[in-house]
Length: 140
Length: 181
Image (cartoon, rainbow over all chains, first blue to last red; front, top):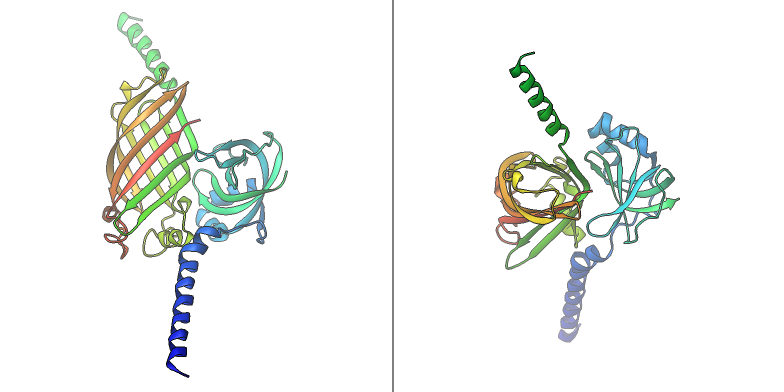
């Protein structure tokens, strides 16, 4: 192996390393967001997931936090958040606590209050509502 | 029934009236942003699932999930929620409960932008610190919006990751915007 090949080899490794660092630290994390559409999800109703969080939040967090869930429930209302993302609220048995879902995209969901829909999204935690983000509608 | 009792009785009714008239404005999609700016890096994250309530007697509160803060770069988001910084698995929520000192200067029935002073308790990572901020209540066609921006010291809340002071600023700017239903 002559000197020239060694230099070429080192250069090549250097270039690959730089591209690798750029791809994994700067490109991939900003361009590929988690998509739950094809993930296997925990199937639950809006009523049940609210009940689980109300009766034992720590346990419910263990079971659901950051997981994909498929939730069926009755629509309370469809709106948009302040950044224009569509939202839908699903009813539970407690009027003070619902499932608050933020959907992907920017088009407001058209679903009548009282109708039943199924969404798939990621559980982000529990405030007075159970919060679901990055969701898609799977059945309407 | 003598005169005094009658007067007290009517005062009682008036008082009850004002209690009953108390109005609560609420939203589940208020927005809270934070920004850090240093010579090496500008950071920004937004949370669009903030719960907020405002009562026309001046009480105000905000509640949010730390994991609701979205960064452009998912890797930064993971660091933010991780052990070194927010420990969001251990401290999933942050909360502010306060009062608007000059609420009587706000006319909820009249359009306008009313300057307000808010002070109260901010809890992040399980540590509660008294904070105060200037802001605005904006009344527009009967809808109530609030806006405020203030700085907090990360150290006050026990946030001491290794990049703080270099890549991440010691003081973070928090911007709040709530459009009530």
